[in-house]
Amino acid sequence: MKIAIGSDHAGFDLKEIIKNHLQEKDIDIIDVGTHTKESVDYPVFGEKVAETVQKREADFGIVICGTGIGISISANKVKGIRAALCTNEYMARMARRHNDANVLALGARVLGTDLALSIVDTFLSTEFEGGRHERRVHLIEKIEELKL
Ligand code: RB5
Image (cartoon, rainbow, N blue to C red):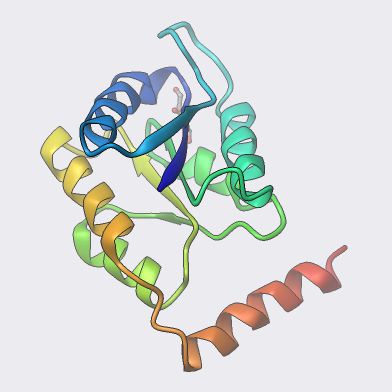
């Protein structure tokens, strides 16, 4: 499995922790930055992760900012991206099962480290259920087509 990960300055520390956690599980990482704690703009990194997933250079993306809100909004502007902001394992599980989310968004300033890692593990280990949920995901894709 290959994961694209990116954050702004507020998410930098958590990004590094998640990176190490996933590398320990032999998961390949594409780190699009940021690479320091210097203030940067979250849309840049949301877009980079989303484009990496869109091009299928990674199986899933993880985006992190202070709340997870700005970077999830940014990632969701990229066609084919379904970024889900999750604050607990249940949301992470359902984002995969029902929404086939391909990007996980996290808020570094609202989550403890252990909870964040548990959300990541849940997201990456849960399969899309398909069936009626597939029809709904196709309807989301249809909205993208109409708005082009
Ligand atoms: C940066 O201060 C903060 O605004 C950003 O990380 C994020 O929370 C935006 O949604």
